[in-house]
Length: 111
Length: 114
Image 1: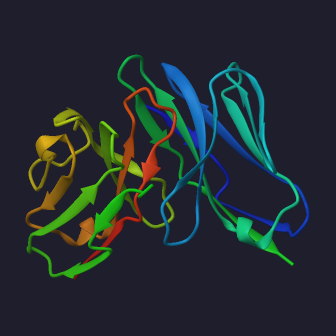
Image 2: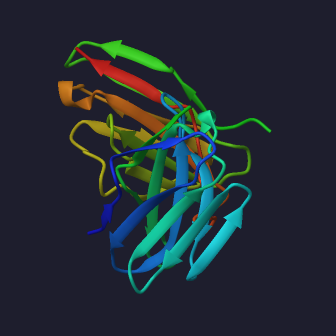
């Protein structure tokens, strides 16, 4: 089976930078996703990494190290609207994929 | 472009009653997913459809849960009979196909079983 671990909660200050870590143990790794989910709403796609390295998209960046089974999501210039849960999800398989989500990290941005 | 549509948004039923959830995926998306999400947890896959075929239903409790995707478009997820532990949010998602990077999620149906 898959094992995905991320912190339960984090708090950061508006305008600051926060890094949310995700570690995973899996077989047949085929990509790592980050989703954002505001309370009571649907998850929305943020980023996708399949090769090692950093993917940057505006204020959000995501990093992957496949050898270490490790990823992080970096949020810069935090805004109050960034308060949400951030879900790490690992895709496995070949030809027929399965996406397994972590429990999510609830980020609270404070003034 | 319209997103994934789900109904109802909220449902409250008594245990042992049946309940059904409906999902309309994004037009042109061949792959449809049903997830269950408990409070403070990530979504867990129940079933995945490629067009009208259920290709992964290994996590679906088949004694009480059933799903269908007639004509490969809309889908219905049913629970009969519902149990207290079924209280959760049921999310529907769709993607262009199984290899597509991004899944688009609907707003979910919040089920409360009393």
